[in-house]
Image (cartoon, rainbow, N blue to C red):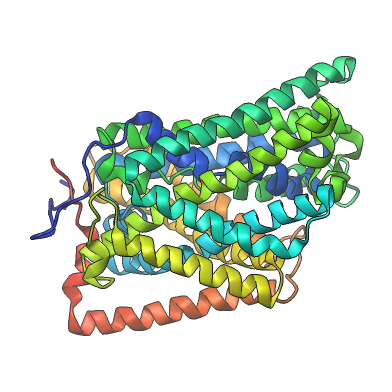
Length: 489
């Protein structure tokens, strides 16, 4: 059966700039959204607390799970290249009403995603300047506001400028961490061992062997979030039906190898037998304060610090591209006010850019001053997991049902059947882990205010259900239009 895809364009408005981004830009849109330096230094160590010296094995397990999901999203983007991405895929594969709820959930991701990254910039810079040079940690808000303004400026100049900047930023953070990792491996000499790729050093006394490896992989999966974020810039990509699926798979695989290299180097350099304590080393920043100095002294410390700052900027730049394109797509079909489909002279969604800037600064400053920047960061991170993990599950289901219903001639039992089922299952424990729901022994309940994340996400989705009911009664066509693909073909 043919896919019910409509080609459409917004009457009287100029569309996004077709073919403006080549494969490299598309690839780094996904790579920088994963923030590989930040993930290596601050996210993956949370999983290492469970896997210990077997951290590289945990990364391999997480990589396999994420490649399965990348396959599903890549398969959908091959046929449905759209700025709506997530919600367009789910609308086709499952139902437009479910697609609308995905779009509504993504909006919450937009609201907290910018503040999440801005707060991260605030405490990374302020804490480092305080520890090294005695600057007041109260300067965090300055760095938070500055990164929001910088990313706004990049986004305003158009997708070509922002993605080219992303390539440069992403290349820098990757080169720094690869160079330091290789240095640490060479310095280790005879201490290098392949046993870190087995359960030999999975020595957490409460989660020894494979239980620790699996627990570590669940937390490591969260470090891969963003591998699919090439999809929202599909309408601006060159040959999107080819480049977007390839970029999603390539980004996931490349950063997976990057994580394996880094976790191997950290295990060998820090000592695989004592890796369960790695997460607290160096005041909770072991790569900057321990391994960077171990490799290259003060220069290593400085380069890691710059790579982390660079990683936050690159991540927020990529997130800004994705969020503004999704808001543009929602404005185009009137799920948001039509002003969100307005473009500036550089082809960027103007109202969406200003909305993202205002929300990012306002929410970040409120959470940072009401709690502190780190607590605000962790709270927003928890909300993001509550939103994105279910989306990954739905995207895997959508892949299966889409090819089964509309592309039966292409349906492959493994690629479109077995793998999406496994992908959906893999993100269930990841959702519980990120949300702090103790469905497994290695997951603990979250303390306040982190425990507020689940209710916030739930209340937001209840409001979305109410909006959905209103749309069904008054303008059901808007829901049906979540299936539209605005494609030149």
